[in-house]
Image (tube, rainbow, N blue to C red):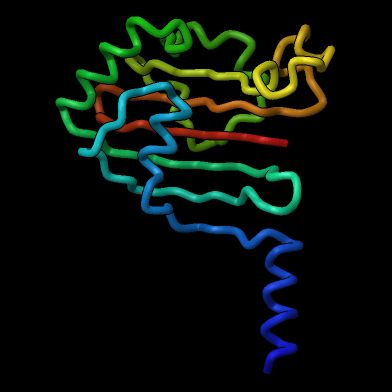
Length: 158
């Protein structure tokens, strides 16, 4: 029994046990990634996270339904943060490996893109290239659809 438990614990630490359920503070994590003030009146409708292992590579996905009041706050914050833009301005970011569940065709939607690679690895020469033209990806991409009051968040680390 002890041997089985040790093997199981060792296997989980080596392989990185993946979580498919939203942790209790997922909203805090999302707000931090998107540089938003924490909001508590949101419901996580769907989420998954397969980050794990020694390098922490993986994908994080979340779909949130937010209240009218939070939608107003989010739109207000987006007006002062240059990383929030109309979806019609997405341009070459479409070339990134984005999750197919992101509603990129939302007519009134706005998107947020934050490239973590220059923050985390400032010494990489590849930071001088566009994000879609790199060997690895470390970013968060979010879409807010004001008509449905839904926020979609996708984080990729490779």
